[in-house]
Amino acid sequence: MRRLIFSFFVFFTAAAPALANCEPVADRGKSYTVCTFSAGADAIRLFWKDGDGRAFGSLDHLAEKLAARGERLAFAMNAGMYEEDLSPVGLYVENGRQLRGANLRNGSGNFHLKPNGVFYIGRDGAGVMETARYLREKPPAIFATQSGPMLVVNGAVHPKIRDTGVSEKIRNGVGVRDGRTVVFAISREPVTFHDFAALFRDRLKTPDALFLDGSISSLYAPPQPKFGGLRAIGPIVGVVEAAR
Image (tube, rainbow, N blue to C red; front, side, top):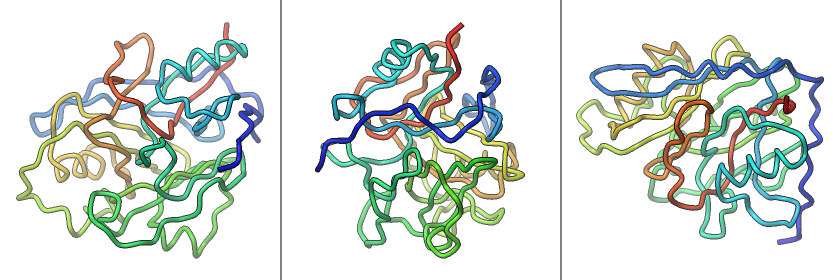
């Protein structure tokens, strides 16, 4: 794969300081951290490679690189599944450039539990869409990442996510409401897929939500304690502000 030049140039006007508004949430006897941002007001970005063409690999490394350029990482978490070389499994758009095409293949594992979906950020808003709808409607995305499965689709839990499921893991995901309010959540303890989907549907009120990653999910949201980060990761979603 050709070497990619790491750039912090984005198509946003200067954003006000990002208020992560991270809070602990208890739902159905399980604990979560939920962080809320406003697309267009907060600089929500996706990151994959640094200036040397290598995957950042960790939230701490991304924070260090941003700090060296006079920016502060206010929030970050895993932004989707990835290959062994830390490259995105599916569609990936960064700063308006599509660096990976959509993955429509069938297969095993969470990513291929269809419908899967795309989380995207545009100039003035954001959204979560089923992959097929995203490709059909082509929203003007500056950043986009494909993952799966969808957790909530049009206000309903993914049809293949059953409330009888017993597999519990750490999980992180994202939902969007009103086309602007972006809600990230990570479980602080193992949870089932159904409980995680129900959190977005019932508590966070996001009509569409997307699973981003599982057991290796991690969170960076100072001044809260860091969570996870024991293994290298691929794409990262972060919120950035100018260093004070």
